[in-house]
Length: 480
Picture 1: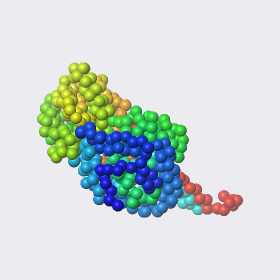
Picture 2: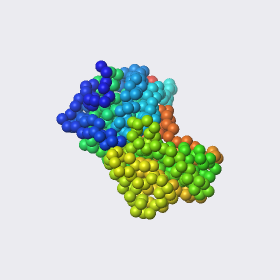
Picture 3: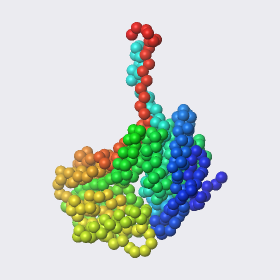
Picture 4: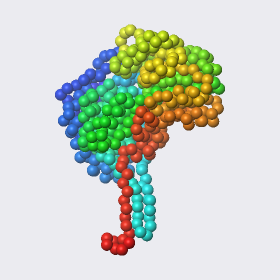
C-alpha cells in the first residue's frame, strides 16, 4: 500500500502502526507553522515496544548473518525508492536546504548497503592437541536508540544498521523536534523486517528516560548533547547497560600561513557553517596564523556574503534556519553576550525580525579565549576567528576544552600538518579536508565528546558481547 509521507504519522510497535492518547506538534522551522501532530507514547506503549523487541530477538539473532545483512541492505533500497519524499519531508521538518537533504538521504542509502557487507570474524586463539579456544561476538539483545534533530535520518541509520546486522533488535526514539522522517522509515520497514525487530516510538523527555532506564534494554546508543549524555549514562547504570554516546564538540581548525587563502576560505566556510553549523563536527574555533589572519578573515567575509540563508524548500537557498525555538533562543543569548562583551563582529550578529528561526552567518574577530563564543559549543552559525603565531601555543589552546570530538589542520606542508594533528586531543583529525565519513572508518569522541565508536568493524562490535569458548580434547574425568 502506498505511503503518504506528508500525513498520518504513527509509531511502529511489533509491526503495527499505532497512535497514542496524547500528541504533540512539530513545526517547520522556516515558517514556524505546524507541520503535523505526532503520537506522544505512553509508558505502556514503550513497554510493549521493548517487549516486542525482546520477543523477536531469539529468532532474529538466530537468523543467518546473510539474511540479516540482506534485510538491512533492503532498508537502503527502500529509502532510495522513496528518496524524493524523504528529502522534501526532511527539509520541511529539519529546515536544511536541498543539497543538505540530498547528502543526508544519499548517505543513509550508502550506510545501509555498506554496513550490510560487514561481519565480525571469529578468532581462533588456540587449536592444539589439548584444546580449542575460540572467541566470537554475540548480540546483546534489545538496543535503545535515541537520535538528534540535526541529521535525523542518517544518524538513525548509523544505529539501526549495525545493531540489526549484529543480531540485535531495537527500539528507536527520534528527537521530538524531527520525528517525521523516522516514523515514515518505521512504516517502510514493516514490509522488510519481521515484527518487533525495529520498533519506533515518538515522545519527549519522559519517553527517553523510560527507555534509558528500562530493565530489558541492554544498550543505549545516543547522539546528542554532553549534558544529556551524562544523564543517560547515569540511568544506564541501573542494569549496567552498555552505552555508545556521541556527544558535543568544540572543534578547532588550525590554519597555517602557507595555504592558498582564497581557496581555503571557501573550504573553511563550509567546514564551519554546513547545515547552518548544526553539526557536532563543525569547525567551531578557527585559529588563523597571524601572518594571514587579516587576509583570510576578509576572504571568509567576502565568501559568506555570497551564501543565501533562507527557507530550505526554496530554490537557491544554501543554508536554512535553526531547527527549533530552544536552540534559536540559545543562539540569540550567545550573540547578546558577545555584544555586551564588546566583541567585534566582522559579519552578522543581528537576528532579523519575522517568522522563522533564522540566524545570520556571524563571524567574530579574535575574541578572548575565555569568552562564551569560544568556550561554548554554539551549534549554530556563530564562528570566532582566533589569531596565533606559535605552534605549541595554538595546540595548547586547541586542546584547552572538555571536548574532543574532531579537529582539522590546514597547510601546504603535509608533514607539518600531520605532526600537529598527532598532538590534537580528538577522535578524528582531518588534514586539508573536513566532514569526510565512511561506514568503514571508525568515528568517536575523546574526553567529554563521547564513549564508544560508530561505523567500521569497531562500531559493529559495539553492538555485541565477546564470548570465548574453550573446548578440551579430552573426555570428562580423563587425565590431562
